Image (cartoon, helix red, strand yellow):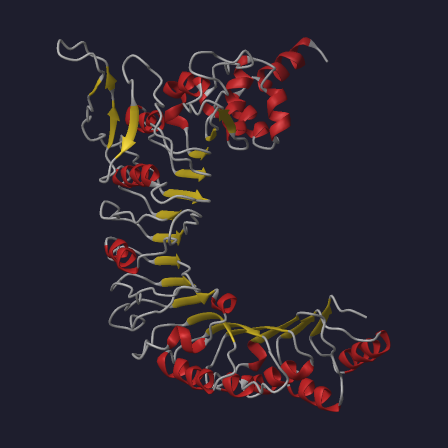
Length: 537
């Protein structure tokens, strides 16, 4: 290669357009190596590397009076590498938790570039974390996740500056923060120490987060009432500062006010139950508080997911009524009971997709869910129901009621758990499934979990054979306890009648190897869409 060729190659390798194209095809390890070539490559490669990696900051395990010798400062972080940040805040043995020093050092330079921020804590929230949102701009932050694990109620001083903030940070009943200062004063009449409580002004709002689109807050393993008071304050201030937020996902026991979130489209709320061994009674969802929370975002939501399990042993909840929501299109309710009469066209005029899940885990049937629903909703086109079959005539009547209430359903998924206590129980599964035959489905799915032998398989297939949408319906039988599958003439006959089913999956059944070979030959001979999975010989 002559000098001219070398000059052209060098020039090409220093051309930002060429380098950007090359870097776009590199994986993270290759990009890290390429950035060490020169400052230009380091600068251009940082943007591509920042899209693939997450920079992690951890709290130092040290006490206030002594800094750990193993603590290391992170060198200045290239701003383009700060697209995704993970902040892990673990308390030290002394209980002190603060922002990592290497994070506070880099924040002024990188806060403008952070798009994804994930904060994980094993502590209650502390003033220094609030300070981060009060003093630093995050104009491009789009996704924020806060996870709090094993919250510990600790009123000890958590401030960094002992001279300026000596005392205890406390969150009062209104979620306002203040410090309780202990001051020793000389007094002519008494030598006793005098405690003076100084209440600071309400914590100011956080700086605006103009591009925050998604907020997720998870509070786990709560063991004492009031443990998430601090996180509720943080959550509310974040919501107040995010005018363009679209999606909120909360697992906690507080009920935020979404009035400032005029553009909120999707809300997922899971009530986190307290398990306090010392309390007289555990705390469960307050249905009136929940309804009040939902009322603050009723005019903007298009998607809503609620998971609020109750105390089934000491059952005394109020009836939940979903507020009128003119824009709601998709609704998912898990385990909530009892439900009021809100699932109708007047209350939810644009609702099209409805899911009721988890009721099979609590031995609750169709009647438990749909008991209070009595007004039709012709716009619902998709319905998913997960229930326990209760062997009562009411389930058959409720199935017919569902078809009358929601005549326009095109996509239907039914997950049915069948459990027999004795051999005298005669299920009405056939009659119940026949009630859905009039729906002209574009997609149907029936999932059966049972501990019986072929009795339930026969009952289900007899119920499905009359469906108008048989060719657009799939069936999944999952056997528990390895019951015996019997392929007799009656079973062969019903399988042939249902041969137009989209497919059938059978798993967990027991069958002798010779009988299973005969079954597979029967499937091949008649070109049946049947799959045998996890069978026991």
